[in-house]
Length: 137
Image (tube, rainbow, N blue to C red; front, side, top):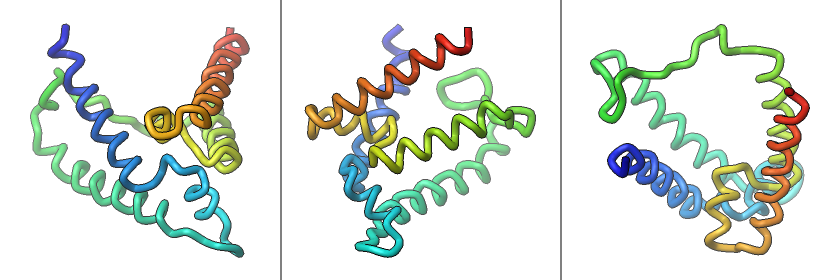
């Protein structure tokens, strides 16, 4: 059981540490990136650029691998995954991200650095997730 949990725990910890190191747990940085005509902050662009580079390398390497290190097979998206619900949810996610200055990953990482502010965001996020489950039923 613990062997199955170790890889996601390690990768999630690395992801959270990277977000904290990149300053993404500070909502002012995200809002600063979106403020094109004010005090624009390019930090988020560099964090996203770093992620794009890592994923570009991963996409080039993946076809040469028989299977992932900790799984039976790769779970890759395809074009049939693109639905109205996905597009609408993505739009809502982006709007919320712009308003709050946090998204789920940095929000959870911010719990360690600034628990009071992040807890409000996490509570609202969980309430929204619960609302979606109720509506979908």
